[in-house]
Figure 1 (cartoon, rainbow, N blue to C red):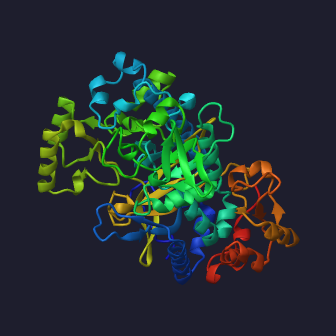
Figure 2 (tube, rainbow, N blue to C red):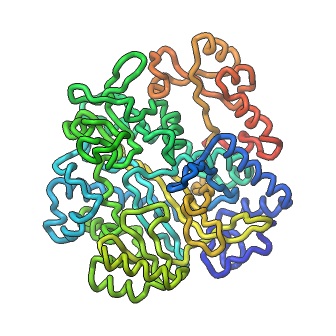
Figure 3 (cartoon, one colour):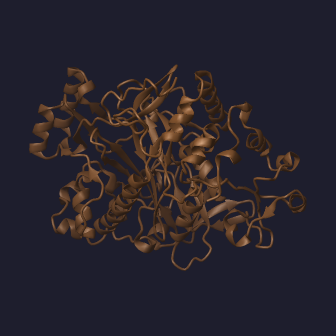
Length: 569
């Protein structure tokens, strides 16, 4: 089980070049894997899977009548993104998000781009994602899309293309962060040698992005995460992000509107909420404005938002910009607002509402990928080359009945990356979802969610359709030394604080811990767990004794030491 007999089969491979050698910067990983025995590799894979089970990192499958919770399949061989490639991706993503944000603000207000005929008015107004209830609204700083997950693919030519934009409630970032936590202990030496850029800063950046979104004049905003509840497929992520930011996790039933302000019910009484990171679809946010049968939202929430008394991230109505038909116009949108050519290209797209495009699509269903414009998760898709005549006829009928609801794209030869399948390392197709935050500036996390189609020949990478995930290593540029050791924040009682100081723990700067201090005064700082802190009894007070044991010795002797695999930046 190594790379000696690995075959790229003519596809662009993310790790191995056409000459059979590791791509630039990836040699340490290939060398470490080649030096391992098959038994050792399988033990590391098993240890990673067990860690995911123990941490409860799961997702629910839409439509599963049994309510099954599944562990997101994980492969320990990471995907590599070279430094110079990342520089281009980062610039392209920043450009794209800036233009899309201007587009959303424009169409809900002045509609200049529609009046100028750059984007067809009928295309926008006929979209299910266009919300008339958001017209003449201007969020703070005119930022609508605070959090984005943009799906990228690489074709046989080695170029990255934007497959789609996810601007409503993009999910998956918790897997990115947890994958990295596991991966650093799986190949610690290779991780260190390759100067992998950090992703652990995401929680801090997300919190600052949400604070920046607060209504004008609020200096210390109250931020919460709004979740549909424990039965939502992404509930683990909602709770994880709330914990990472040190903010309350609330359901709609925990909130009410009083005198035009959103209030959170607490044991101390009502507290005003300034920023809501909502993980609820637009239609369920407010039953007085959208779906009247919604029990997930907050009656009166949209009135508070319109008045400017509360901020919603992302703002309602952002889905218009990730409508797959509107997607086809993004290059023109970038040119219109920024006066620039797109840095990242779209996949060529046929809009079935256009008679000429529709005729071409219907004549070539066996060659194209057909998508419903408002569905995600791998649902509502026909992959022409892998479809039957009966399936093609079903989609032809759907297109003829509702042409506005469908687009089509050529079938790409998605890049592949080495993946452990059984007792072999074989190539499997992947995509890539980087995460972008829009606050005081636009920040692109140097990493992202690499999803892998585990079935041979499959191009569908979605977890709900049997896909898995990998860690994504964005390589640093010398003299970058890679990701620094994680600092575990500990919220302690006064007695525990005194004991902590005596056992080698350093208080965190209170200025930097306002959002994790749980309401404590600046004179009561939290602690950070330093790499040389070794008292397991004290760690046990904080419920992290097991984490310490893994840090000190490696899990079951399989994971390497975290300290060995990390260096100070």
